[in-house]
Image (tube, rainbow, N blue to C red; front, side):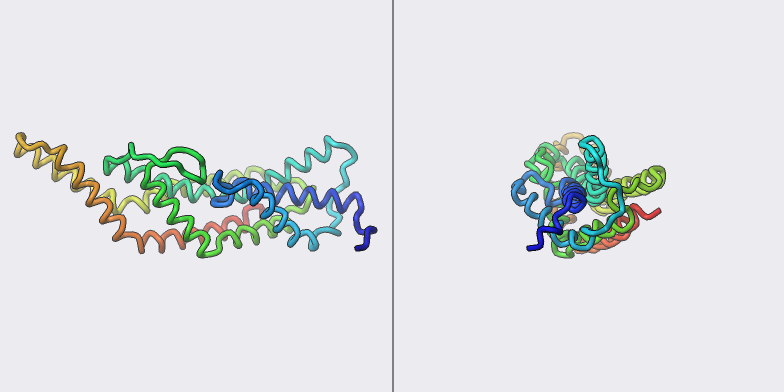
Length: 259
């Protein structure tokens, strides 16, 4: 091993790249979950870094910091760049979980909560079903590979130590990504919600015509059975919709930092 390659700028470059890679793994779906051991997260970050480091180890695109304060400022900036890439992907999962919450309320099972291993919080069981479906599709389509490619792209668009592009531009792109949370939840839930709403109206008419009937005892199991049947029937369309959303997500993340 040629020890002459281990210089102060090279070591600083290594750690700055590590901060950017770690930032992505801190926020990206699946791998940032509380169920993933910290050792695994560190190992994945270092593994990705070792693949990317040879391409940027000799790049002299920044002034070597002279003290801890300057290095800390650069480290925080690099951490933020990687974090925003991972968080952009997690926004899509937020929309998926929101769709499950809408359906849980409409079906009357919103009190049936389970522990979400991704967020470490209690969420409705249908949100967990949709989140697990999105996770399996995320891994099956190798979307995490696309995020790593986007991370590599970020080193080309924003070299180490360089200032961020226009914050107004990045904010506008993030607002566009954030707005998709509600669109994803709406499109995933509207087929089932529409049928359940019509069922609710029909039960209201039945209750008006026949007040002696205990409509609550009839409605609750009916909506649960009908909702689960519709969710299972719509699953192929759900997978196709999520696949298109993943493809769009990768395209948006690729140009997230493009000026």
